[in-house]
Image 1: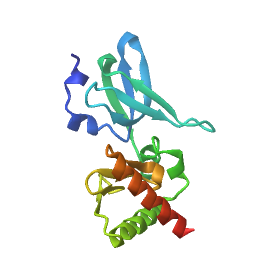
Image 2: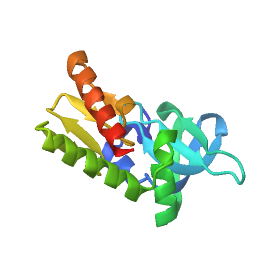
Image 3: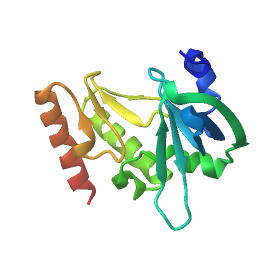
Image 4: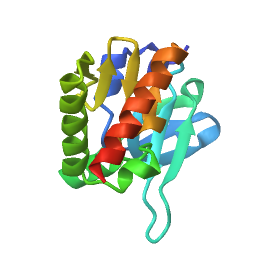
Length: 167
């Protein structure tokens, strides 16, 4: 196990949203913005934003990482860009304010219909229904997730009818 793999997730977290140089096995060197570090394998997920091209993602496997050096901190604009790297395309059609309004309106409507709903996740972006179903942005029936098929079907129907009433 190398020094990088021995670090804790709290240590790795300090590299997120930073531009880094990663020295890897066989004298390979990679550069990019750290999106995340996998806490199990210690793999580093790097993003680069080439001009006029879509985002480029590179994963440097944890066992190959020799050294990671920070070259630059992200400004607010870059942090926002990095946070949207793995966001579904549908949710990119909405601004953060629109997504917040959709979430709050749907939550209020569900509560009005006596459906127990809470917000969860770091930014409170995910709605949780009765502790067994989640609704992620952009808060459509397709974004509902649950292992209970009956609840899933009923809540998807509720969300669909809510969206139809909005139009």
